[in-house]
Image (cartoon, rainbow, N blue to C red; front, side, top):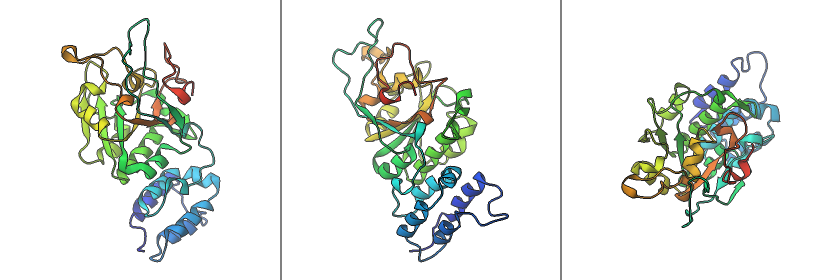
Length: 292
């Protein structure tokens, strides 16, 4: 096959992680880069080079390596062997109908509790393997929040988010942004978010629930899986995913939780929250992500 067509973007991410890349000595990435530049290079050769990378280098150049998975033909998410998944391990919540007896009001405070489990991949790896059926939803990220600087697996939350957006764009996934205030996303996410074409914008204010907006509702129902990132895991994201007391106009009933419209994929590393995910009146809706 031809040499890797996205080599320049890949190398830009490599040098973004290490501004002194190969200034004094040959990098352990060099065998991989040589294959990428080779017109006769193959996916099997790339897989072999990825398997031989030291764990330290995988962590250091993760943005570039995730991008490679998304753009080099024939690679899968698991072709990149991560030293530790930690808080970046993605959890999948299975689409679940709202029970007929659903009552989110005090004192009952029901939430939709869906079957859930870790998938053993990062969100980026999951997207690489499931791009055709997966969309991305951002919730209330108009302004940079201090907790977006929290570090999980040696990377800030905002860095994890940008990585997910970069991979999703490379895999031609759709993007939906739920926002209350302008701009739809903060400056720290604008470059990766603005790279998408035809983004679905859902401006819902002063309410919180995205499914009040028909475009948001359609986006969720038109994708088998939706990766969700946003602020705050204990309030706005929680309400959107699992339900709240908000109702539709003209007596239309409670606004549909996202998990009743699509399978939800997320991780602690892409959810903004001050401290562990431990919401008030917890009903177990966060499942395997509770207290992470």
